[in-house]
Amino acid sequence: QVQLVESGGGLVQAGGSLRLSCAASGRTFSTYAMAWFRQAPGKEREFVAGLSRSGIALFMDVVKGRFTISRDNTKKTVYLQMNSLKPEDTAVYYCAAANVYGIPTLYANYNYWGQGTQVTVSS
Image 1 (cartoon, rainbow, N blue to C red):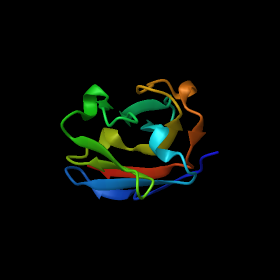
Image 2 (image 1 turned 30 degrees about the vertical axis):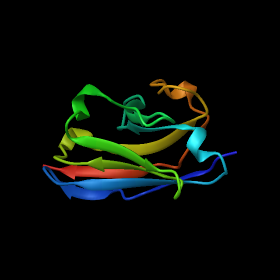
Image 3 (image 1 turned 180 degrees about the vertical axis):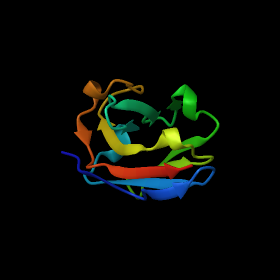
Image 4 (image 1 turned 135 degrees about the vertical axis):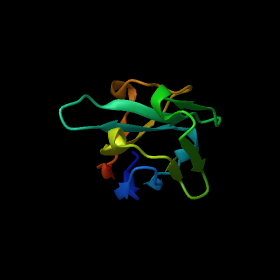
């Protein structure tokens, strides 16, 4: 069983930065693929970035070059650094974990979810 708690969301102006954190419980954090999804009002939840258990990263095209994802297995935490934020990045951001190899991009493939953190980017 894994519990995930996100933090770091907030209100920021366009062009600004935020760093989201996701703290995990459980003893096998290092064996999980970790990912960030987001969901804007009226839209489906979409994959933003993921990090495999071996450290390989994957990003959706619209955030490439602006977002980075990292993990600290000793702290059981995954981070999403978001730079050059745009109003269209506004959404609730969710942390997710999957006990798999690779980086699933479909939310149905993730076993555990955090409660979400709101990110609002003003123009």
